[in-house]
Image (cartoon, rainbow, N blue to C red; front, side):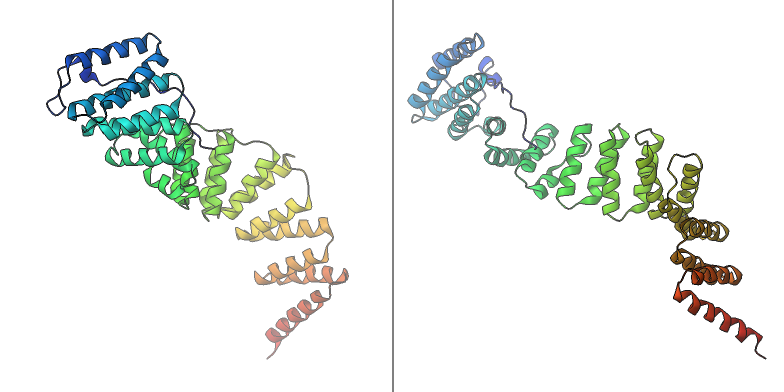
Amino acid sequence: MFRSPSRPLLLTLSLWLAAPLALAEPALPGATIRDLEALQQRLTAGEGASVAERAAAQVERLASGNAADRWAAALYAQLAGHAEARAGRHAAAADHLARARALGDDEASRQRWRRQEAELRLTAGQTARGAELLEAWVREHPEVRAPRWRLVRALAELGRWEAAADWLPTGGSPDQQALAATVYQRAGRGGEALARLEARLESGADAETWRRAVGLAQRLGRHAQAAALWEAGWREGVFAGSEDLERRIRLHLAGGTPARAAELLETALAEDALEERLEYRRLLAQAWEAARDRERALGAWRSLAEASGAAEDWLDLGRLAYAWGRDDTAADAWARAAALGETRAEAWLATLDSTEDSWRAP
């Protein structure tokens, strides 16, 4: 899922070949420098196979020598890796760079070769080893962003979500923000995942990303935020159609804005944006009830009961009316429920009668 794209990695010789030697590096004979430069020129001219063979032979010849010989062997190993990489043999190229690291004493060169080896092993599909090497390099150079993103992808591919989350840089391209959101989510850090998704939305995103953000907000229990995100997406034209409209309404109801849900549903039914169904009439009644708009709630419950003809709906209307002190409405609703065979309505009517008698008692 997160495999990095395979591509040739062009490894270049150190710039010191064309400049005065650093004091920290062992001095090399002029013939060795000229040979390295000649091999580099041949490689540029396309003679990769012969360059790799010649450089590898020089490594074997010099590796057991003195400090200068070993440094020269390291440079030949780097050149062999360069040649193999140009030919697309990334694993072999990585092996040559590992040899260069083992032979070289210059820390800056060894760090550079470590990163290059890591990149090559990742490209060769040696993900675990590549991630191990790159993580060691990134630990020493945390300020360099591109390798950190490469490391995050490698760790994600290995399913090491928590480690990947720890290395995530801030910001990033839209695709990187999407990757960060996935990593944080799989690492159990939902809040950070949602923040990355929201950042992705601000820079333009498809409907799937909007839906993902809303779904994550819901799973985190942030229902008001989920409703706000869907509303924003609707206004941006990301969502459309009856299914998306219904979800918009239900999100408002769950998100603590039931009056808005009821208004949207009323308009949708009036304009035939949603088909007339008892399910929507019941949802409308529930929305106005949650908004505590007594007149509209009781009216919606009555409309529902009349449309459904169900004793249960008349019973519910009576209960709500009774709770809100509308005894006449409650009595009428329970009488209708009783006429439809609902025995519980008779008990509720008896309760209402006893309440009235208690008020009349001296």
